[in-house]
Image (cartoon, rainbow, N blue to C red; front, side, top):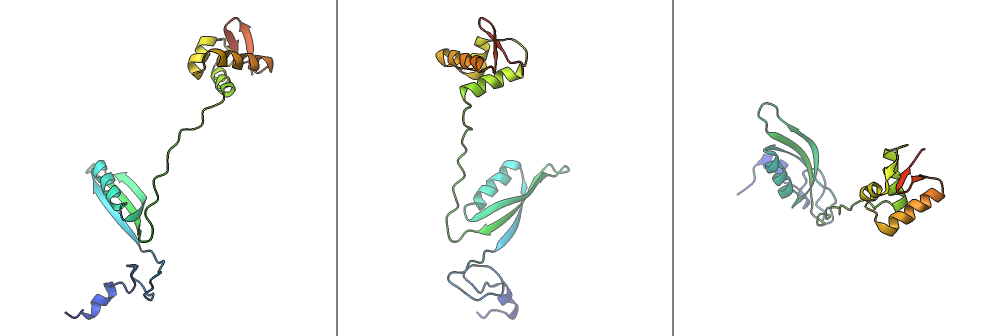
Length: 157
């Protein structure tokens, strides 16, 4: 079967799959960008996004909910991923825990000028026993907090 005269406009001349005026090349780095609109329930749209990510590098452009139909509309851009597997999702790590001194100062900063019980400081900072006592003593010695009476501390500035 012979192609019709107009069908060559839609056949990619190169293995990259992109339409355009460039010669076939095994190492072509041309990446066609496509625009996709997905409409439906939010979970269905997110599922479609996941399916597309199997073969495309997908980047969301717009997302909104149609007030009339209450359907979600996702407008996505995508680039065909030919040469390398998709990068794994970035590992989400928890922020580093504050130092005991920073935790105590933050706890007392919220109650500036008020006396705070040592047990309350321990509960809010998750510090216990010797660590809490050592931290409070060190902060009193350098003048960052004030030891008001046994078991009570405050920060004035």
